[in-house]
Figure 1 (cartoon, chains in turn brown, red):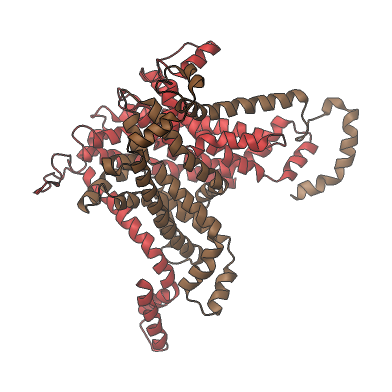
Figure 2 (spheres, each protein chain N blue to C red):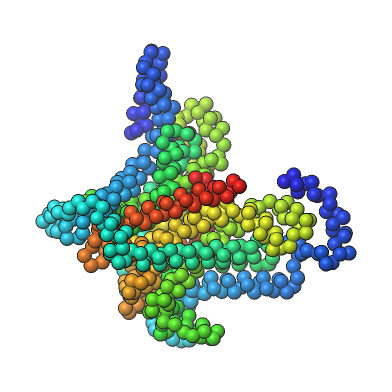
Length: 302
Length: 332
């Protein structure tokens, strides 16, 4: 920093000198030639096409007739929402959708509650056990789902929670809570401690301070935590595949009954895929900025 | 409930204040007075983690020391309850796996490492490239950013299905595209080598946006003065990238690489869903292999648990080692 300010007086002479000595001229950061501009946009357009193509393609196929995936050229002649109407009316998709909403909603409520209380306690107090707790959260994020899936399966079957919304919600809590707790701790760290102290002076209990002063202030952080928990539950495959039976299938499991290994029904699969994607993508776009800072902060602050 | 009890406790201790006590007890109580509400708030999460993570982990570890499988664990079939009949076998399972006697571990490990290294290297390289491009003033920047994030916004299993549709050997549009460019068409989901290329490709497609956004955040946090100083010293764009951008990105890129390695090592969805059961098993990484072990045929719970514990140990060792090295380089 000091080096930079020290150099500043040299700017003016350097700027006037550079046209005189073109051989030493170095292109600055904000200038670029027309050719470079074209190359820049061309690269980004190519990347955009690659990024968007699979999603656009599945949307395109979903709007076509039943066998559109075999003759993509037929789609434009017969654009319709036929597949959507068909799959909503003649499959269990509405039921799966409802199951997923229940499970994702439950995971969100549980995840936010657990993460917020733990994050607040760790953020405000260096109590014995706080470091171990955060360390446990960090390591838990490293667990491959396979480490827990068999013991959890047997545990849930003993508790009679297999094929049960609550069982799946609890299983998802193990994935969502550790990350959310890190994120909430980071968020609470940004709220000044003086607010807590003011609350205590005015006679609130510690829990009252948390509930009546801090929670309202932490709403943006809580929202991100909520969305993250929601998305975790919305897109999870391994636990749902093993724990749930046909009446309680979530979307991620249900769609596999269309996209079977041998004869996938791509008309229904593609329509279902779009139905699943729209809510998730909307939620995601709302929170993605905060999500990234939370993710990387969780890793660096260990 | 905890709250009420602990408030009562605080009142009582407040009244007792002043009476002489053995030092140890009073230290414990002071600690309780000071921290009870923190503990009360942590209790729910501690209970959930203990019951749903630590207990299953311990249980899994115990299972890895037995010969449990579907035919000898406790089960209730209708009204009939069958007690568990599996035996404790000590470290036999670990020996069986690590000595290479099961014939699967080392091939799977090698492929898992290749898969992780390829994916993470491509994630970071492409993510970095796009982040540098996006970190400039230009038209349509917001549009590009929103579109490039799309693969991350879509739930990963949907992305995988979209690719499965495109990669279909008979009707897939992907083969049409690459033949139009002049490349030979492939049976992408058929032969082991093509499968491996396909899963890496799909995973790179899914993973790049996170890397790009995280690195873009890192780029924007590098102070502009550093670039101005470098420019004044006559550094070329490449020199500025190597000497200012890369060191400035190190805290972010270290984290991104660590997270990327862990996630890719554990990536279940891409491999399991892209190939389904149409695979010879050559494309299975450790995680999907252990999953198949646990849930196909006669479930080998002990074997799957052994694999799980080994995977976890590998990841813990790797991240400890990695963090130690990166901390050193960050401080240097």
